[in-house]
Length: 229
Image (cartoon, rainbow, N blue to C red; front, top):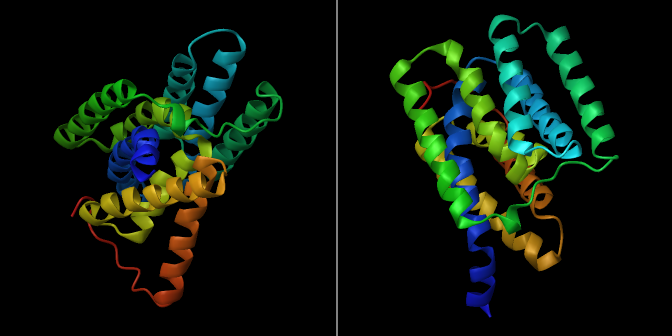
C-alpha cells in the first residue's frame, strides 16, 4: 500500500524538492533586501498572466512570463510601497475575475517528471547566471522567470511561501532547502491522508512550522547572515 501511494505521489514530491531549491536560493537575498512585498506582487502578476492567457487560449506559461518580466523590470527601477501595493491589489482582483472567482492553486499531483526535469534545467541556468554575473538588478528578473512555471505548478500561495518561509526558518541555503523539502513532503502526505487540496495543505504545514519555531525561540537574535552562507 505504501509503495502504491509513493508511486502516485513521487512526481509531486520531486517537484517540491526542485521548487524548494530555487525558491530558497532566491528567497534569501529577497529577505536580505527587504523585497518581500515586491516578490508577492510578482507572484500575483505571474498568476494574472497565466489566467489571462488561459482565458484567451494561449499558453499560460507565456502569459505568466510576460507579466512577471514586466513587473520585474518595473520593480528594478521603482519599488515604492504604494506602487507595489496597487499592482498587487489590481492583479489579484483581475486574476479572480479571469478565473471566475476560483483561486489559482496549482496542480502538484498531476505534474510530470519530464516537466520537472525541464524546469530544473531552467532553474539551474537562472541560478548560475545570478551567481556568476552577481548583479543585484537581475534578482527580480530571475524571480520572474522562476515564477513563470512555479505559479502554474504550485499555485500563488505556495509559490510565495517557498520564496519566503524557508529563508525565515534559516538564512543558510544548506538548511533552508532540506527543511523546505521535508515540510513539503509532510504537507503532501497529510493532504493525501486527509483528502485536502495539496498546495494549500503544504502552505499550512509551513505556517505551523513557522509558528512553532517562533514559539520555541520567541526572542530570536534577528541576526542576518549572508545569502547562501
